[in-house]
Length: 389
Image 1 (cartoon, helix red, strand yellow):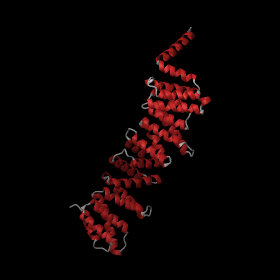
Image 2 (spheres, rainbow, N blue to C red):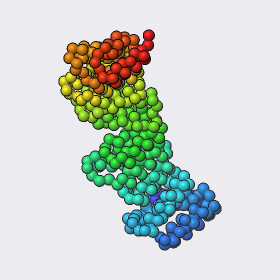
Image 3 (cartoon, rainbow, N blue to C red):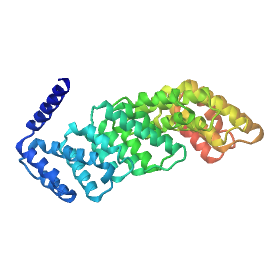
């Protein structure tokens, strides 16, 4: 009796599902099931222009994909079958029939590294908005590809690009880590650019994500997080300033690594360009650190010049004091021996002019009394004119 009851229930369910289909949809399904593969594709194309199907066009496309899924073992790479899938996938994306999302993903798993797979993936992105399962599936697939690429294996760039497109459509902050991993993994620039664009378009607190990477990531992740923030079209000037300030602070705690040293220099360049005055105290710490390293020949002149430029861009009276002390020493040595570093001296004079603190007056005036070249004398005169009294 129980077996008979189960069969009865199944027949009722199937009959109810068939009853729910409109006569037009039932007719299309019957024609599709009886036709050969080539004719099936033609029926799908005809359905696209048939207004009598109305909202049920998406159901018909899903029906065709179910056929493709059930017969993938035998006809997976058949040209006509691929055409059926292609027409159905594009049709679903156009109609927005999201009830087909599970079928789409199952079919994607049959074609994970092919042109048709890329089309299925992009369609799944369009139809899977707010679907946590689909978002997780796409993220996991891309994470697997990233791991393969980092381990030295070849990957299909078209599929990576399709993943990025799907993720942009899904628009979920849970995709931040896998997109950021692309930037850190040495992909070609065009792929990294696509990932950066997706990071900018996804709704969410991108600065907060990057801050977390700068604080807690590996040295290379810290560096790439800063650079991603500086390249971002989404972040404001304030966001970039905060990231660069955080990056410089992190690098001053520990910079015995090539990536951290690169991050430190990049942060300094960014803060100087942004004239981020909140970083004044950090800039002074950085100046004294690099001054010592320069004297010990641990860094080159460019890094010392960058420290001076940073003080000029963001510094206050405390920064001016640090530069005045340095210029005083340079003036004394120049008066005594006639020897000085022209680039360093010129950079300090200009930085003092940018800060404009009147405490620099005597040191700048003393420059004009010494045998400096014309460019330094002129810069000292301009700096004096910019002092605030």
